[in-house]
Every structure is written in structure tokens, then in C-alpha cells.
Length: 292
Image 1 (cartoon, one colour):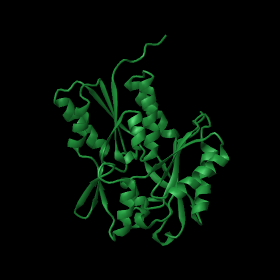
Image 2: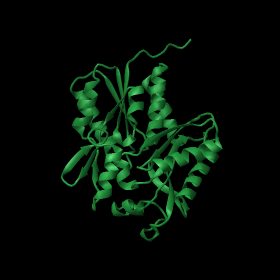
Image 3: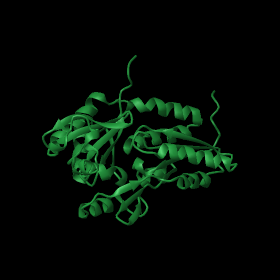
Image 4: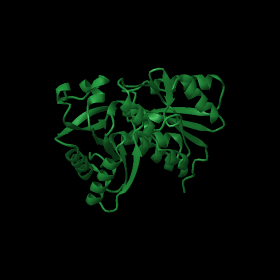
């Protein structure tokens, strides 16, 4: 019989993961807040501003807010809070869209230079929002089952290819204002009236389909789930940017495809919401494993 790992492991992430508070509490995951800035005002996602408050404020502003990743001191402070643990696993937003991974690594070195014994492992999720949530929950289950840090990171590395994140945007206006439309291959600024269906894959966002209206976009997202999902996993996450009705509509469409589906609905937070704009709705799920 295999001996379970007896080391104490703590999971840390950032609010760009959009980790719901109740799930973070359930799995004992520490979330470092990213900052969102409206003019001279600085708010901390999930701490001093909620997703609902963020979208209400953004709707009133002429200029888009900006965001700022946690700094070195924020990561070091989080590590030091759990310095008595054996291991700390810090899972960051994709390094292709954020400097958080590099910052977390620098903070790890600072933490170790201070003589703390807890070993910090920083993992680049190659994801954002609820794609990260899928990985974090898997890591938490593995810790509970006695897996060691190397087993966990090996599993997360393999998950990168099998996390499916698909979503429809209600508008490209925020992406245009933020200079992100050009990042979506094949979509130009003169196509702002369409509803693009996008995917998050290999660390970046790309388009996968174009819909004439929002409902057609949701149907295309459901088709992605139907064709790609690993049916051994009933859990999926439906996320939305201030669009609860859209999220509930997507949930019902998914239930029509699979009666036993376990849907958890969550908010897209400020960091991602700046560019997605209000209305964005999508799903994160486990895809079928690639066949050799």
C-alpha cells in the first residue's frame, strides 16, 4: 500500500483566477488580490470591490479602468503567512498575458533568501479565470488524498491541454478600447456588432466561431462542450460578466445536453472583465484526453 504524503501543502493563487470565495474557503485556497484602478481610485478585486460593483462602476465611466497584478511584496507576504507549512503551491494567471508568474518567482526567491524553510513552487497555469479554478480544485483534491507537490504539478501540467474554456462576448467595445481586438485573429474593429465565440488555449485567447446574436453564441459554446467534454467529469463552471440571465440560459442549455451535469455558476472578476465587458458568458470544463 502506498504511503500518503504527510507534508502540509498550501495553495495560493491570485484574483485573476476568479476563484469564488465559497470555493476558496472550502478548499483552503489563499487568493491574493489584483488591483483595478478607476482614475485615481484603487480597488482590490474581491476585497474592496465586488464583481457586481465593478460592472456598475465601469458602466458609468467613459474611460476604461486599468488593472495591476500583485507586486513582489504581496506575494512574499502571502508566502510568509504560510511559512510554517512544508510546501506552498502558487498558481498564477498565464504568463503570456500577465507578469504575475515572473513576479511570483522573484518573490519566491526573496522568501527563500529570508531563510524560510517552506518550499515554494510557482506554477504557470497557462489559463485565466475559471480555467484556473478547475486546476486549483484538482490540486486541492490531490492534497487531501495525500499527493506530494511533484505529483500535483505533474497533473496540472497535463491538465493544460485538457482544460476547455469557451465563451461568447456580448460586445467587442471594451476589447477595442483596450487595444485587444487585434489579438483575436480574424476579428477587426469594423466587426463590433457580431458576437464572437472565443476560446482560451495555450495561454492566449483566440476566436473559434462567429455568431449573429448572443443566443446563437451560447448554442455554439454548448456545441463545444457536447463535442469535446470528457463525460467522466460531470462538473463544469459557467461564468459570466454581470450577465446572470445569460449564465442561467447557458446552464439550462447544458442540462438539455447532459441531465446529470453539475454546473457551478461564478462571476468574471474585474481583471478579466475590463476587456470582456459586461455580458460575456462561457464555460470551463475538462476535455477528452488526446489519443496517441
